[in-house]
Length: 76
Image (cartoon, rainbow, N blue to C red; front, side):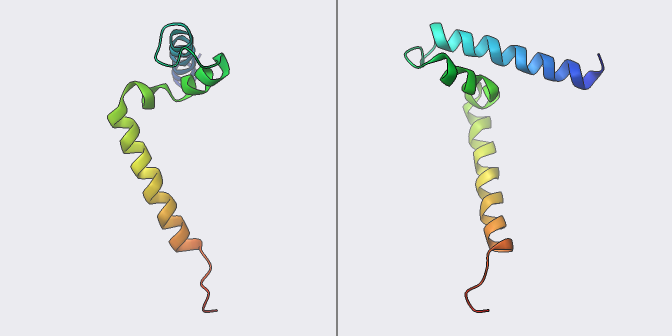
């Protein structure tokens, strides 16, 4: 295994452990396993709320910039 494969294996393993923990003992234990597996994919955003807000802000700014750059003008 090269470094990239090890990184993704570790990331997905932590995500799976996080999903199983959330499903049985976490604050979303009343939701389905599928919901918790979805949260497990983005586990750093849920485990570190400040990081999640940072990523959300970056995505919001990128979306606004994309609309401004690629949006059609009504004046054409």
